[in-house]
Length: 206
Image (cartoon, rainbow, N blue to C red; front, side, top):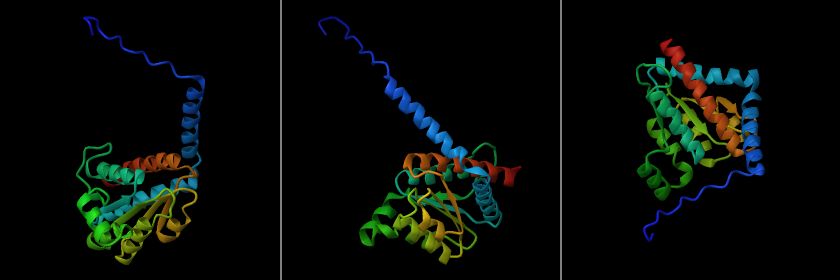
């Protein structure tokens, strides 16, 4: 610009209110994890045991969710197929929310509520574990998916928040984040997922 270098604008330092908001969010997130307690820790350990038994039978883990929960399903599947902390054999796991052609065809030709149940009908078996993730516990597509899994004889695990009663009643085992806030629930869910992956690796590969 007329031979002069444009000056880079410096960002203004964060204000006190912004810093306080960040600290409050961090504390709230930490509290949600701490509040899980021994009973919920036992459920997390049981979910990992379900998966260990599934893999030993030659089964697979199938996960699904919507929005941020879809990302969590994909994240957990990736940790199982790839690795979490150990060099070990790949584990069969898949997230049903990643195939856009399947999702859009079912949504367009049938209804969105069937996007997971239709895939479960095609892919799940009695040796499998099916995990439905819904922060509200009321998502029709998640509820239909786990019901289809139970009809196929698969073990079902739900992941939800405090208000997730419909999902809790629909599955064999439900993991509940102690919060009503979607961001905090999702942060707890991925922590649960990481712990489960660690326990699965320990159970199968020592």
